[in-house]
Length: 194
Image (cartoon, rainbow, N blue to C red; front, side):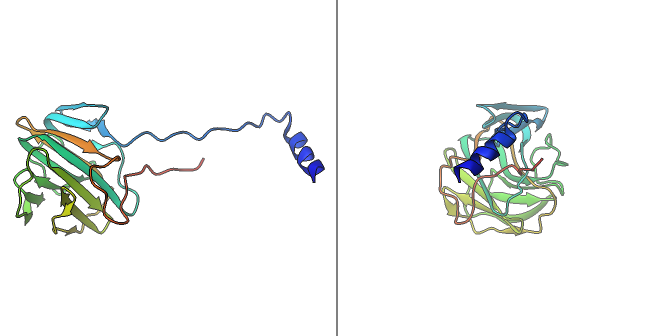
């Protein structure tokens, strides 16, 4: 048996075959290439301030994704989902067919239509969570479901956040404040084989 492994090792010797380490995928953060003109992204892509919106640097490709944001400073803000066609300079978002967002006043808008009005308004220090499973978009406030499912979202979808009038949001794509609902996990980049 030892002779077999020795032959195998000798067979590969001198062929130039080397172990190639796998490339580590970048973390999911706010995308400075897809943000509004007056947006400021700091804290290694985890904080948005200024005026306008920003997408995450990766779409939601897995079956069940979760992400969060903490309201560091109130003002005009929103969190939700969008396609790459979304106008990231349009505040508030949710006025076009490319965005589905929870606004600071507790309303959820898409295509300039009110989809839900929550019974609670998120405040400074609160954490808003989002789940998306390619069937439903759901929202959570401080770990509790807001019972406002939205269906019918189509296309390649990204997390989106927007701010104005002094709002500051910290986004979390991993190391969450609250445990994601059962079966949901952080957004992962799609890996392709060469």
